[in-house]
Image (cartoon, rainbow, N blue to C red; front, top):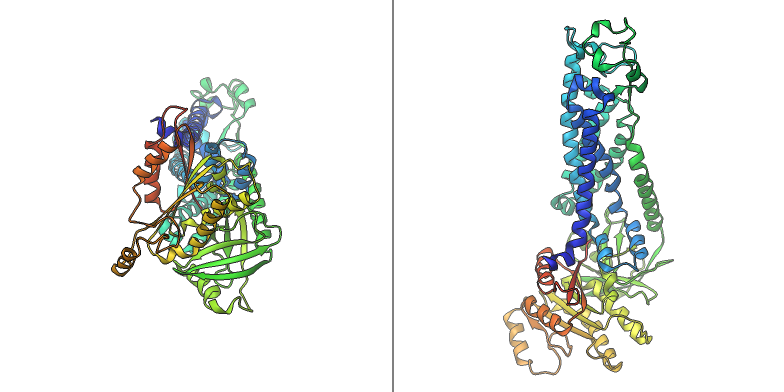
Length: 562
């Protein structure tokens, strides 16, 4: 349990606090509308459905305040920079922004469903009271004309008509449809295969928030005014409806609608998000110059670019758009250059329709250098990720799978520059680097960087600073024979590096045990850029080999999320 707390304790606390606030708001507003004297007569018509409608509405306000914040990438990057003095576990929460965004969306869907069902009962009971011919209390309340209580003013209508003709009803229908489309189109299948469907439907949030703001303008949830409560004793008068307006003790009660409150909750986040989009729009219009393109094996394209005012940190990522391929699609790519360089680079592996098109556009004529007429590229970013925290640990474990090695290219390059400039202030004393690939060709573009770093660290007298292991998970019989024949060579036959390539998948238990034994009483950062199954295996190891003792070895797990 203690090991789990190290990696997930703060995340669990955030979720518990969030759920606690939701529960508190629900219970508080349920009790308010269920027992507040102002709503006594309202409850006589619609009963507890009033409280069941208003309690989730309060929770909707709170969650709609939160829903936009996790997708404000510039805000998150600013917070990450502002929290640089905080512990890594605190900054790590910012990397779970999309997960939290989804949780809030599910909570909104839940409270929306409760709110809708309750109001359907409300409309039905309001309508029944209006059409009643008996002299019951709810019928009398429904026929008060001046400062009315029942929003259904005619006995020649039905709940469906009211739902589609009132401001609250019509805006509620629009909000619900927008929410359904946004949630259903956000599944991984649609988002990855039909990105433009996801993009268009997700931007229905503009209609969603506009509907939220005007939803309460009609003020259909009404209550007895304070003056009326003082003049009209409902506990006495409810049993003497025939005397209403005839005796001093029972004047005809007056009612008023509650002021719209949702706009007060969502106005701030909406302004923040508008600023976010304006910043993105401004960046997307900046001129990006592609200074070099290189085609690597395994259909990996390297783009080297320059943009005025571009500043980055290690491990950050950018979004790239190519209008000639798709006006709407923005794809995230980790920066593989170092902050010390006067350009920035990304490595793009051809693995889908958009990346295939980018590869064909910029990588077809490899031997011709840069083309004379290149399509325009737009860049948004850079944005912070977990890899920024690599230098906050004395020992860091970097694990990349396939093209997932890209954030660590930036880290390793930056280390080389820092040591070249005799930067003795570097806190990191040891780096373990693991790279897992299926094909030998995938090693080639990154091996040059490793060879250079290996050579430079030896010259600086720090040959043990970087401990790297490359794992090849796929090979054919011809490759196996060639490897066997040249096994005794001083350098590896696949990469040309001094450390030999390993074949098969890593034994993570063995690796973590070895690292834990080598660095007792140390907090070790584990950074992964790879698939979810690998993340689960590594997360289990970080929990297993972290000690409960505060002075023992602790592994902090971090995963790249875009």
